[in-house]
Image (cartoon, rainbow, N blue to C red; front, side):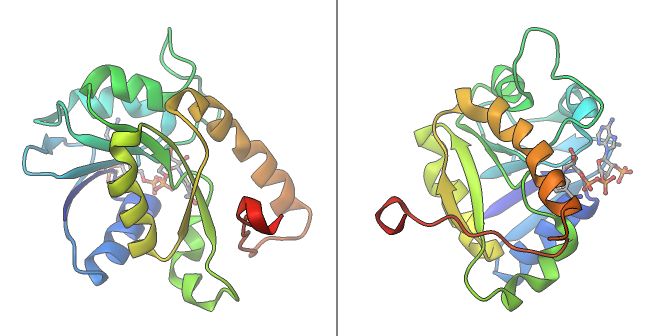
Length: 183
Ligand SMILES: NC(=O)c1ccc[n+]([C@@H]2O[C@H](COP(=O)([O-])OP(=O)(O)OC[C@H]3O[C@@H](n4cnc5c(N)ncnc54)[C@H](OP(=O)(O)O)[C@@H]3O)[C@@H](O)[C@H]2O)c1
């Protein structure tokens, strides 16, 4: 798959490495902006408060499938939106999902050490499912569907709990969410 990542830091760069190892073709765009018209999937991995600037600097992503991986740390979503992911959809008008915002980039190189495949939440449009689930699996995660895009704000706010768990001594843990029939 041709993937364009906006943001080539810990998350954008780290996921790009994982996906290239899985055979995908990844274009990495930083704050200088660029063109995403070739992309079959676009992943947004810039600081949460910079999302409007980042999207303004990229051409050719209208109608694309976009996965928003941002978190809002000390920032709010753009005015009029309850989440960054919904803002992304308003700009691109294509299938949109929220994913990769609740797993730590520092652990990307250790996914294979987990005793079972770590889960990774995604919520968003059904039209994005195939791409999001494939890119989760190709990065080493088991995708867990968390509802429609309206749930993106809850998924963004889940970060507070992740930090709480992390500070409670589970600094390098992977979490696994059991499917409903195993709960
Ligand atoms: N780190 C994690 O474990 C983690 C996990 C899940 C989600 N997240 C979220 O993922 C996002 C990226 O985190 P990160 O740790 O990868 O950050 P990072 O290492 O600081 O990388 C940020 C990237 O965003 C680009 N950028 C900064 N300002 C920009 C702007 N105004 N327009 C366009 N691009 C801009 C930077 O461009 P340059 O390369 O040109 O400097 C850089 O490539 C954040 O929203 C973060 O909250 C982080």
